[in-house]
Length: 132
Image (cartoon, rainbow, N blue to C red):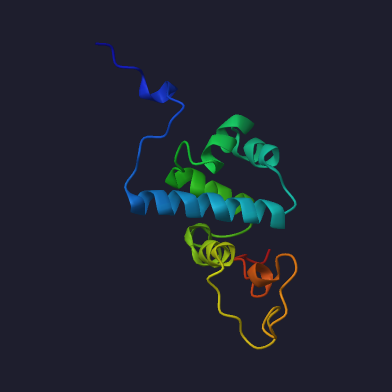
């Protein structure tokens, strides 16, 4: 029986749920920060000295983020590694998509009218950025 080289596998090794959650959180936050900084995957890949395809597989969860890549990416995106590890925004987004939100007075949809667009996910959008 031959064993294939895991480095050439197109499928991510199943990680424990905590690790998967952290990887998903990093990818989500990197995508948000790319948009915030008006950058795309190619820009990030060039800044990190990687191929765009490598960034793509990281963002899609097929390979993990190393600690070094996390720190470098945070610097490029003008934020901190801690901000990229913060799952608050991702969890708020998940709740909005699942319809599991409570609205506060003044929030879109709080008066009983349906919200239009992405208001619930962006009302309290706070992205961990450091001032430069």
